[in-house]
Image (tube, rainbow, N blue to C red; front, top):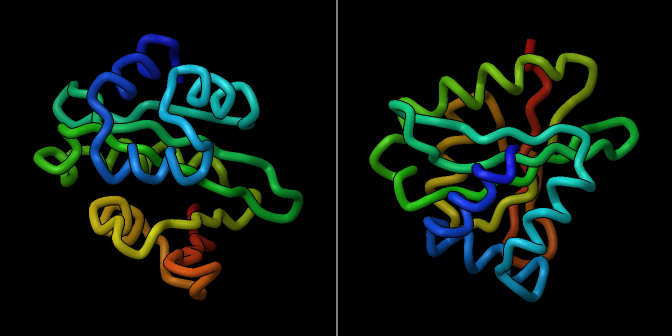
Length: 137
């Protein structure tokens, strides 16, 4: 994800993504997004009708990839268009299973991940779900 995309994400981050980021990083800041962006192996902004709807960060966890997704307030209106962009980017990662740990109340992110091929794997630590995507080719 570019610096411009990270800035736009921070400026228009959805409430659920703000809460999620605060829970995971104890702050909602450009610094936290920049660290995520630098620590991951691949990141990308995803769009619906040329509007930034969010960013995905993919981490190499050995035998799997782990996916972190944060959305903007535009995502709700454009999620059907944005899912095609996410799916296209994830298809490039054919060599490993992709996992995502998502808060069970993050319905928008969950619906996006389900729509691109993720399936629930198990419940983890408290109110989170582990989703997996094995057939991403």
